[in-house]
Amino acid sequence: MKTQKKSIWVRLYRWRLKQITDKQFLYILSLVLGISSGLAAVLLKSMVHGIQYLVHLWAPSQSANFMYLFLPMLGIALTRFVIKYVIKNNSIIGVPGVLYSISRKKGSIDSHNMYSSMFTSALTVGFGGSVGLEGPSIVTGAAIGSNFARIFRLEYKQCVSLIGCGAAGVMAAIFNAPIAAVIFVLEVIYANFSMSSIVPLILTSSIATLSSYFFLEQDVLFHSVDMFNREYNFQDVPSFVVLGIITGLLSVYFKKMYVFMSELFSKIRAKKRLYYGGIGLGIIIFFFPSLYGEGFQEINMSFRGDNSFLFEQTLFVEYQEKFFIVCALFVAVILMKVVAASMTFGAGGVGGIFAPSLFIGAVTGLFCSYVFSYFNIRVPESIFVLLGMCGMISGVLHAPLTGIFLIADITSGYGLFVPLMLVSAIAYATVRIFEETSVYTYILAKRKELLTHDKDQSVLTLMDINKLIETDVHTVSPDATLRDLVEVIKHSKRNIFPVVGEENAFYGMIKLDDIRDMIFSPELYDTVDVRTLMYMPEYFFSPDQGMDEVVRIIQHSGHYNFPVIADGKYVGCISRARVFLEYRNVSAFFSED
Image 1: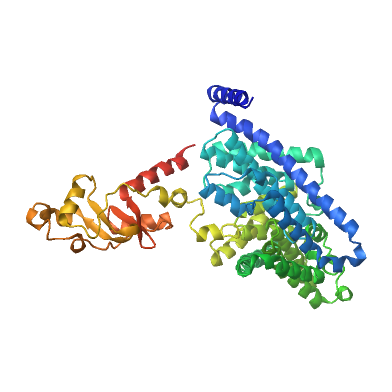
Image 2 (image 1 turned 120 degrees about the horizontal axis):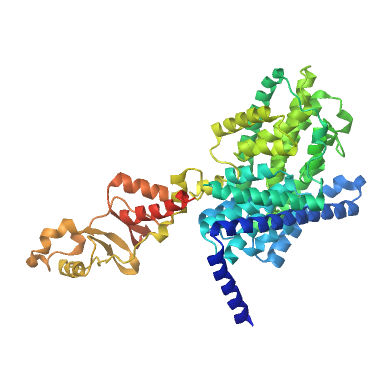
């Protein structure tokens, strides 16, 4: 039976190769992927809303603050339990995990990520983890695309296209923002793109949005944005500039605090991270309940100019009319959101940073409008909230176009296009003064594993030094004589000979040009030994060395062959010709349309 099924599948695969071109097939899969990713987004939203409903049903509002002390920790504990005992495999972590799969795993994403990220993130966020669903949902969509590519035996470039389509599909469905989803993938996921890769993205995003709309209609994350007057005056431009600078600086803070907290939790034993992170998160949410969950309710309140979420169920409710206390609460909520999100991740929760970025941007915009109005500088609150969100997305994700088009999409128009461009550009320029990489990319960039829009850098990232190591180079023992060396030379086509002892211990190198005159002096064969002829090379590589450094050394040194040494042991050799041949082959990937 299995053989018969396999035979049918093989015949179908061969028919597809003959009748449908790769480009046509990619378009077909992008349509199917649009439906799949749209349904995945609907399922994720439904699960989170269901869990939140049950949690609030179980936890009465009058005791909510005390429940906050352990509800998030309970959700993270359940998340860890599901990962360890149900899924029995760690999910890839958000967008950085997708980027790593593209640059280091040929686009391969384990099939369990098609559902594991959804369930674990729903538990984390449903019980109040202070993170978002966008990162895990993007993993889900990317995993669906990757596994489509694996099932249909597609090449690497087509696989990356489907990964991007899946990521765009779920993002478009969640935000009801198909254009922003396409831009996000082009800015963050793809290192190279052409018209052939843009068309599938558009197809998937539009179909995913329609699929989500079919089930949820207008039940999107942001409400009532269209009710506000989005007109602005030329006099508002200086305040927009100030907001752009503030969101840029907050983006720097976001990145540095996130990295600091990640490194802090990495030093804590894995078993204790749940307690430290869960208890710390519970205490923060106890004092600042607005940090509970994703924060989209607070964002929608900000659109209406309502800052009551700062005081609801807090100890500060009687100070709502005190300007400086209100300002202090604004600042505390803005700064502590990053800490709360980082603790959620550190404790073992699953989520994304997209929602925290939007939350901080919205609250920052509301805060700035509140301060300006106190000094009789009238600015439109709803516009400032939208621009603040745009600035934070641009700065935190290093994705200025995504910030612009996301807000333009969710406001159902482009009346704010010029202010969005201004704030986005200023925020991005500000953050780039201090940070070269985003929260998504700093780990991969640190390990030289990040694909970028720089073609040369991307080609070097895709190259693997271990695949360039040649092991057919003849070696010679350090105890050998010149006679033994001559015998080795007879059977070698190379002009270099590594001197290697027991257990592959590396002693040095011998170059044929250095001993050419001795070869024709037989009287020296038994009186000269290898140790007197060898030299320690000035340049050598290790198996974990970055390809950009390898190429730099090859160009700088002018040498043609280099030994590869790991912990003093000889591994093989790398030749200039082999490196540049591989560079040309990988570079062809970025040149094809």
